[in-house]
Image 1 (cartoon, helix red, strand yellow):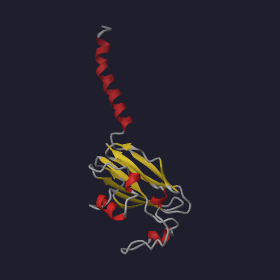
Image 2 (tube, one colour):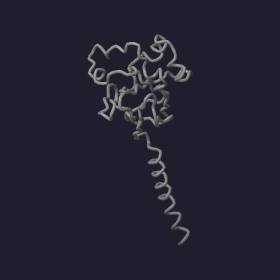
Image 3 (cartoon, one colour):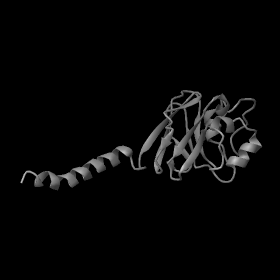
Image 4 (tube, one colour):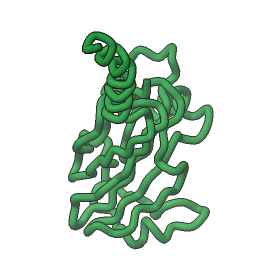
Length: 172
């Protein structure tokens, strides 16, 4: 009788272990918080499951930040660091085929995040570039109130991406 008991419980134990493993892996229904700082993305995971949602928080007290996420074509082998250094027309050729996967804007001081494009969920497998194009020193209120003509001119201020605010994430 003692031999039968462990055999009956073994499948149940295996199911419990698999369920716990599935919960630990997230199954793609996780939310990952990325912090925008001056001028970097902190806690940007290098890899997530398809279905993971990215949430943006802004640690800055003065700078508006955005998280623009573009899917990188499968044939493209260059690093994101190389891609952000390309001339604008070459970047447009790589990323300009459609809208970004998401655009999240986070005002300084912890204001409400604006989901300008997408809902923060990454559903398609592949490699993604994560960038912030907000100009250094941009007026957050003026930038957020921009109408259909786009944001106010940046003058000679470089975008945050030029200061190193970019990263890469792979969706598996």
